[in-house]
Image (cartoon, rainbow, N blue to C red; front, side):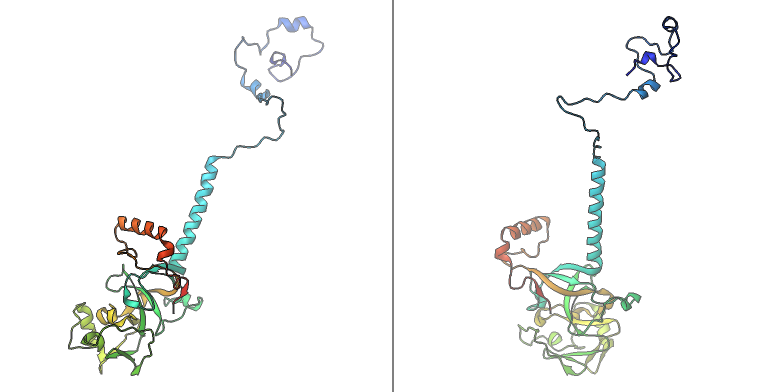
Amino acid sequence: MNSPAVHLADGGSPDEHTPASAAADEPSSDARTPGEPLPEEQSAVEPPTVAQPAGGNVSPVQKKPVSAGTDVSSSLQSLMGTVVIAVFVITFIVQAFQIPSPSMENTLLVGDYLLVNKLCYGGGSVADYFMPYRRVRRGDIVVFHYPVNPAQHFVKRVVGVPGDRVRLINKQVFVNGVALKEPYARFIRPSNDLFRDNFPRLDVSPGETPEWWLQLRKLVEDGQLIVPEGHYFVMGDNRDDSYDSRYWGFVPQANIIGRPLLIYWSVKETEPDVTAPSSMGDKLYHFAYAITHIFQITRWNRTLRLVR
């Protein structure tokens, strides 16, 4: 490569007929003092020197360095996509719940973990005609927002649908004058509770919610409770130990979340508060205990069982 001193300012080359002495006597426009940096246009002509490894050849194709920012952005996009899918599934398709009380024994036990099908029932909108929805039926087990405190979730069995006339005589459920066959119902106490075992009773106040007591008196006809439109009468399978519609009223259609589909895990009650932690310390203890004793506390005969 020629020395920078032989280049002209216009990028041309010296005429071959020009005397060498004349070229030497004329001051060059590119003349510089030792150590002076090259002009900008000259540095653009000269490619930067690339260090070569000793005893090796430089590949003609140079790999571009991978940007760390690109990796982080891709990871965040993948994470956000996963979160969006999970939120969609939990919101519209399936959700996990835990049974904290014995009100549904022996169908559902304390410590059962459920997957609830949220696509089972329609919401009374146009989507009902395009989705595989169906109406809530008598005998269905449903998970719903507790009407008195919607932040809580309850699970009960539907006994009366809109228009039904419900009555209990000595613990036997009658709907529209016909005794129901309920092989799942459990009774553990004697018939000594007039309101619980012979429902509805207008001469005995339940003493739970005054609003329900007033509504109850308006909906009883010929000793039978009439279920209004858009509402359901629900009871626990453990009839003697269930806080259900007898005590706080009907479940509105809008409160129903879905129907239990599967018990994906079931845990024995081996120690106090193992299955129902409250504080952060209890939750950490519960998690550690479950991990270290998973084979001992799991009810294998109930795990992966369909809920019927």
